[in-house]
Each structure stands twice: as C-alpha cells, then as structure tokens.
Image (cartoon, rainbow, N blue to C red; front, side, top):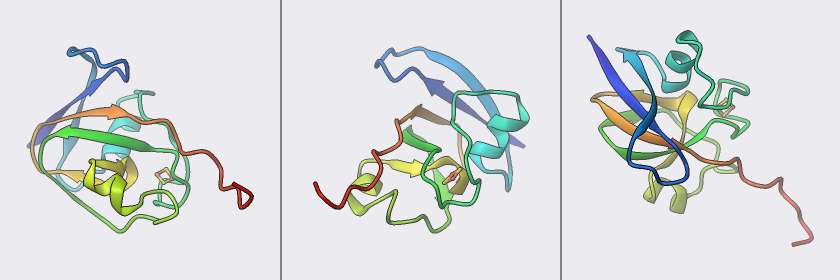
Length: 107
Ligand code: FES
C-alpha cells in the first residue's frame, strides 16, 4: 500500500504542484527520485548534508536521526525535517524548504 504525498509550492498556494506515491519502508526522498520528481533537492541521501529540507504541513510519519547541524529542535517543532530520513505513515502534505545558509563562525 502506498501513501500520496502532496508537494505544495513554497509561495503558500493551497494547491498541490506535484504529488508522489511513497511505499512502506521508503523515504520521501527515495520516492521522489524514483518518480523522477525534482521538487525535493537531492544530496547525500543519508541525513548529513541538509539539502533535502522539507516542511511537513500534515500527515503521520516516522523519522531516523538527523544531523543537528541541519535540523535543530526549533526546526523539528515546526515540522522541518530531512526528506531522506522521513518515512510516511499516512497521506501527507509537504513543502520544500531552502537549505540553511552555510555555517559562518563570524556571525
Ligand atoms: S540528502 Fe543529504 S541530508 Fe538528505
């Protein structure tokens, strides 16, 4: 059984710009890649680079550990996660997030 994930435009539009089907045990990023979608940026695929940041608007999911360098406690509280570490457990609505700026120790 698969779940339908609606990918919305970051502009705040209510409509789904794309949708993907995610199967049991598959990450959001893997499903997006398998369907030839480019709505979620692809990087290391292992939770270490932060390129695949998304914001979850609705739906249930489980997740694996994520680098705190890229996803902090506030991000998690706001539903911002890494698509390569998220396994949907229901239909979902998400929006892509821009990757955080590179770390600068002088700021
Ligand atoms: S692709 Fe690198 S953290 Fe997801």
